[in-house]
Image (cartoon, rainbow, N blue to C red):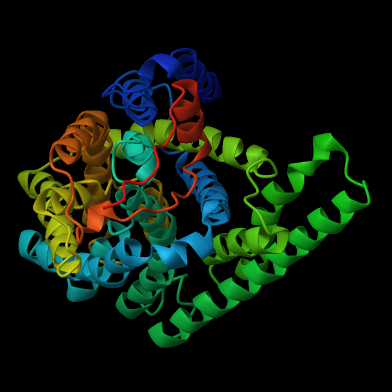
Length: 437
């Protein structure tokens, strides 16, 4: 454990040193972080000790997810989203619940020992997507804007949606868990959402008013201007948790309210929060590889491997196909949307929460399935993001959409995460104007 900090720092330095060269290649930063973690973990070099690092992962992962949710929400232009809401609404309103349902059915079929409640918990944990693991998809300008927008917004919203669902599922499975505190699943669901919204609105309005009025009076030094939004995410999380609500919902709501209070995209104001989120995300994936995925791979079975494959394919792609019925999306587009549903940070955080705050009979099997699925997703979606985005873009160029085709409609694309945006700027990418019929 003495070398853990130095090893994590080495991983960050190494990836940063070649970050520009990774652009447009099948190798992603997350893949390198996880691979390095596997190398220095207890299964190989034993540089990071499993027993003394378990609680660190939860604190780090929760802080990372809170920052990511806050900045994700602040990037979403609600006005533009209302004008091009069909794809994310279909993916979240129909695709997400169907994914949870099919994921639970698959879990019960593959792991016969799981109860219904445990199968639902596993499905909910693996339902959120992480677009950052396939950045090439949401930054490739030749991919129709509406498709990129749909995947980007889906990833930003489904984390927060799944938080109360997870807590309610755990409460239903284990009424004595730390999560439930003796509350019923319905009461827990209402409190998590309600107090989460309260914390987010209070914090978002507070930092929005402070930034607007203090900036107008020239009260904030430049060096401190970016500190306020970053700590605002922590404030929202802390208020909600203090009220026994969801800190993750609060962080997301705070980001949206902050943008509304400012009246513009807080790209400059959120720079510190976004870059801190990127940094913590890298550290989280190193520790995930070292102390979570490595030991899980030592217990790999055919059932775990099968469920991971099903989760990333059938469990994701069939619900997406059903959700897109009637949208005039062509088969290639439906397949593209279905495949790019990477599992990442949110699933890691949810897994650690399940471990520390529940007493499920088959908890160990559930988290093994989660770790293996996330590990496979980092590899599979990382390897395929750039090549398949380019291939889909070429297909789209060879097959111009019809007048009624969903792909032909223009959309204002929500700004992607800073790492992706910087990558796009470094390659001098300009998003072309939307094609009109």
